[in-house]
Length: 147
Image (cartoon, rainbow, N blue to C red; front, side, top):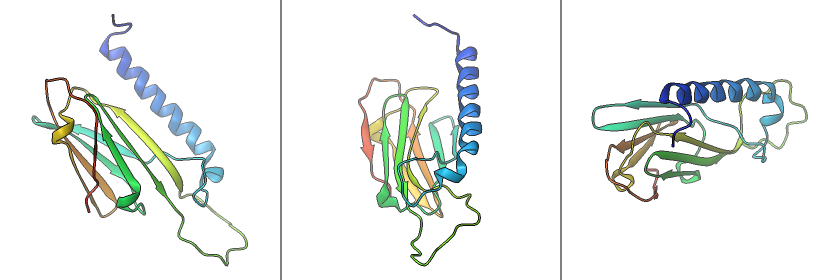
């Protein structure tokens, strides 16, 4: 049984994303840690072609080996860690806007995908995940992030 129609669910999702964005901006100075545990949320775009859904995530400074992508039937989860480049001589920080530390970002897809056919590519600080559309039920699968 559905509680809301699709339009209301989409609006609630947009509201949730806006609230997370606003609350995240309030905590920015404290969230830019030296690989701490506060976490952050990289920017993500989701778009669709006739054959697939495509996720594009801004992961500048994240090493591909530090990224994990889990694809389920209608959800993709991307997690990892971005560490601040070390400079042991820093005695005081005057301005800090770049987020560092662990991240975990999941997005519900508009339709089912074939996890076994999913692929990813990481280049120039962007992760591109291609998710071919599928009508059958499938289990979740982890995919390797390739450079």
